[in-house]
Length: 413
Image (tube, rainbow, N blue to C red):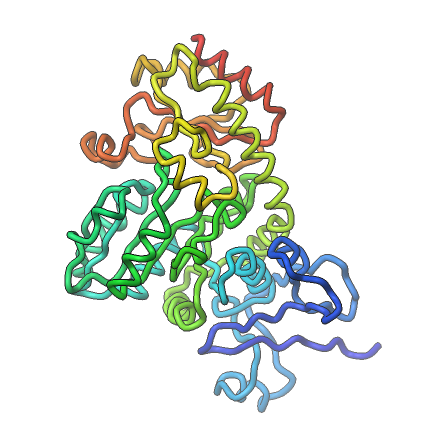
């Protein structure tokens, strides 16, 4: 039997080049198609689904090839902390969905966020942050960045008020939209215009919307980060993260991550790459279920207020319609009875899961004030709309009437 040929990938120290296999005759004009058809080159086995490259390192034909790869004279893999075919396929597919030139995959969503901060910010720099962000991101910004001499200022969700907070040493704007958990919508076009005017890096957490719901690069974002653990995986199986953007920016992220080690495991990348093939159809069902639930519950007597981006009652409905292709899979509402009503509601659910995750095929209910945002002070939670009675529902793929019935049962408790 003839020896198997090996696909050579871009070496240390530069990040891997896209190496997906696209035949010239294939019609690949749509991003959804690319996310399904982009793949690592077929091996001599002619497999239809890409195999898992579960290896920590890579071999060479002889000493000269090994020397040339390490000397950056020849393309080749060295170590899976630097590059791996399974990881590269995942990032190439996600970059196609986001409309990004390239990206780098990390072990979790938080590691992707930290990578963008520590790659592009240094001692004496200033970060402008929209105040409605994930609790762990808040901890990184307020507890750890100051240890490295990086300053920050929180601003509200209205970009028209931000310019007064920009300093001579401001280097980056960071935001998430829709926000976690209050579902505020930040105007990406307005934020992008401010970043461009002041020559700032524009960094967007696109976890809640996914690239199916919105593509921040189209509105001026330089960097897009993801927790692939959520909707991208979609079944609560593996952790993962990603940073997407222009090649010159991602090269810097790659150089930082190559040395510090928050690389995505090949197995997790293989799972996530398969998940991207169904992300479009899953998000269609998640968002249609969520809109149905939101419409059914908006006037429920036990609910003081309810938010979903594509409800006309949402205060940022016009912005959501402008920049989002769907409303996503999260619905949040405030119970009239506050904290105690929230506890009773969660304890009365029989189908919805009680877990800290979101973006699963199975619907999930959570209480942000006591879980994901518990480390914020009461004042900080109040400033971003996280009240004691706030409930976040991650709407799954079950039949919408079963989801609604379980929620109504909890509301009647």
